[in-house]
Image (cartoon, rainbow, N blue to C red; front, side, top):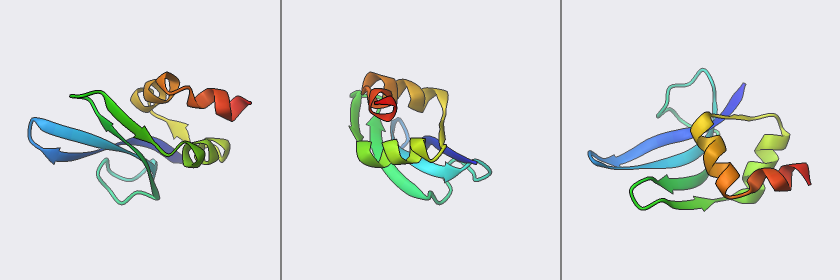
Length: 82
């Protein structure tokens, strides 16, 4: 199963995350199928590749709770259903 989840990168105490599509059996920082966005919790900056995310969701990818909340804030699910 494909999941949309956060991939950790950056320095200690300066962590940022990439939103990636990855096989659920892979480890957190493993090789992703596709990078779909960026999230920085310190500055609350988010950059999303919305068309690619919508495509992955329509293919059946399951977002984690954190990624789901990020996507809800960006109103991505409205585009999937619409």
